Length: 140
Ligand code: ATP
Ligand code: MG
Image (tube, rainbow, N blue to C red; front, side, top):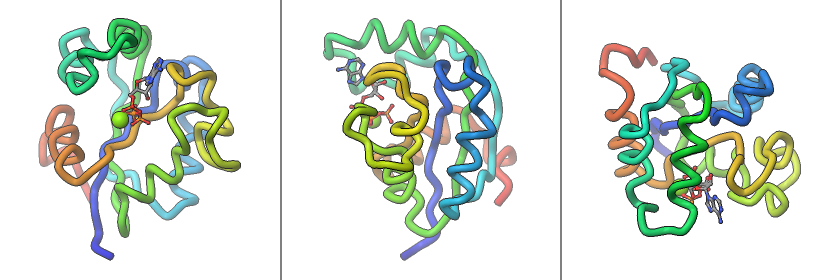
C-alpha cells in the first residue's frame, strides 16, 4: 500500500480534557507519523466550510457550535494506507459502537463530542489538508 496523508482534528471535548498527548500516543503507536500540527480556534466560517457536506443534517448547527466552542488541534498524519488506518484507529462515529482500544472508545463523550475527526477518502483528505495547512508547514 502507498504512503498517504490524512487530515485529523483533535476536537474541543478532547482539548478541554487535556487529552492531546493521549490521543497523539494512540496515533503514533498505530504507526502514523504526525507531520504537521497546530492548535487553533476555528472560526464559524471555517467550521461551516469544513463540514459543508453536512449542511442539511439536523445536527449541523450543533456541530458548528461544538467545533468553535474551544481549541482544536489540526494535524496531518502520514503512513502506509493512512486514510483507512486512521479511520480504524479513531473507531465508529458513535463511541458506544466503537471497537475496544480506539480513540473514540477510550476517550469520546458522545456521538457529537467524539474527540477526533479523520478524512474519509483521498479526495477529501487533500481538500481538508489544504484548508488548514500551507505546503511548507508539512514536514514529512
Ligand atoms: P468526522 O467527519 O468528524 O471524522 P465521522 O466521519 O465519523 O466524523 P460524520 O457522519 O462525517 O462522522 O459526522 C461528522 C460529525 O458530525 C461527527 O463526527 C459528529 O461530531 C457529528 N455528528 C454526526 N452524527 C451526529 C448526530 N446524530 N448527532 C450529533 N452530532 C453528530
Ligand atoms: Mg466524516
